Amino acid sequence: MNKIHILPTGISLVDKAWGGFYLGACYCLIGPHKSGKSMLGLHYARECARQKQVCLYFTSRKPKDLLIQAATIDFDIQAFISQNLIIIIKISTPAITDDLNFHDEHLAQQWADIMQVVHNQKPDKIVFDDFSPFLSFFDHDILKEVFKNSMEVIENRMITSLFIFSDPANQFSEKLVDTVVNESNGVIYIESEENSNQGEITITPIIGHPEGKHKANYFINPYEGITDDFVDPSPMIEVAKGQLLNKIGNRKRLGYADDENAQKYSGFLGNDSNQSNPGDSDNMGTEEDNEDGENLI
Image (cartoon, rainbow, N blue to C red):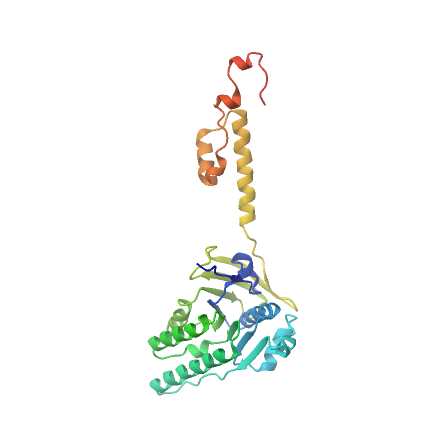
């Protein structure tokens, strides 16, 4: 069985908690307006370019606006564009018509056109920013089929993708977003107060990432981008485990370990705590061996 590779993303919490994204997998990033979604997308694109991989960046924004925002995190995106490591694709926001059948057919065709670009460019990674208007199918089942077909195109080429969506405005929109999220490997959700340079970021696995769900506060810093205060608890757990092992070992050598506590610690620590029994003759000696009252400690 081939090993599934995990690659760094440039998104701080994801890299610290999960180690990165699975190669060839799909992820979603959701958040309110002006919360830092596009900035995280640029972090992701920059890390891709630093790895000398090609990132296809779909956006409905003006390319100049994207260049300006990239500069706010000290990302010279133009230099990577010149090296063909970043490819910006300007896409038009789909118009909504009164003819429901025509609208869904037209939207499905736009998805097909986008996937044709992916096929032609053969990138390593993709950013879809902001892709919310392309979910506006009236028929939920058509969206599900279109997205599934699109993922086959992307994942069969081992392309790692990041879809960026705005917070759903209503229950119908929420159902559309959920359709995509449920087909992904994980979701990043960010929330912040309006006009604030900080907020909360949560990453939740859908498939894989046994490290589980994690949450942290994030901060938007000039010319640095988005950072967070996440601290990996694993090293601290190992330190606490070592301290408990030492404590149990000392109590046993002194000969007054409490059986109930020893069993409790042993259950927490696993088999690592199976040290010498204070009652074993090999450790404490016999009564005859210690007639002179020597201290064994």
